[in-house]
Length: 244
Image 1 (cartoon, one colour):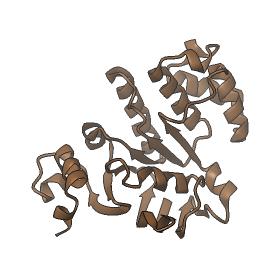
Image 2 (tube, rainbow, N blue to C red):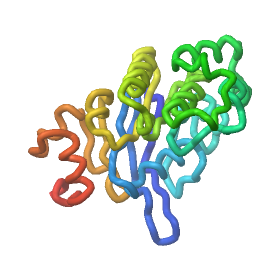
Image 3 (cartoon, helix red, strand yellow):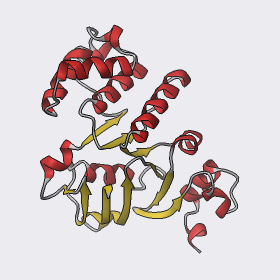
Image 4 (cartoon, one colour):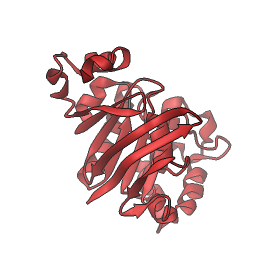
């Protein structure tokens, strides 16, 4: 069974269709890249999956629960991290973990906090206010929060955008391990080399619809492109040329 199933998802703002009939699934153990230029509909899609925005049409199920009719059960199986969703800066790292752990009703919270702090190399920052950490350190704190409730679905929006190469590699390794243990990941990124390395499958979104789907290592060749970055540029500039 798919951990995430998105079916004919649509979002309208007046006469404007931001998302136009998007459908896809993410299975246990899969890391799926949701790709596309700015304004393609990626963040709107993620916001609907998180229950922040209400779809105009279509359905979303997480771990078998419909987000609209079983919101609590669906979102209890989910977590999220993004560079633009910073944690409260006036709280220490440990205080943030405590607050969000209680929000997610995490069992054995103290032990779980110790585990994620060690996993994300944050033990030395436990008593440091999140707001004074570097952007890379704040990103690791956000990811630690995302792992707290051991979610079945992890949504990541540009998770390594502000990280140095060493920290980014640590994050990729942790996410791979999470997927190998049965977690499902939906990952947006503009780093095509990273996506090629990490993702099992990619979805290219253009003008609110899925234009292309496939293995990031073989998909470019199907469209006579040398790599995923060249394919991304074509989708961004000339999407119609790929659908002819």
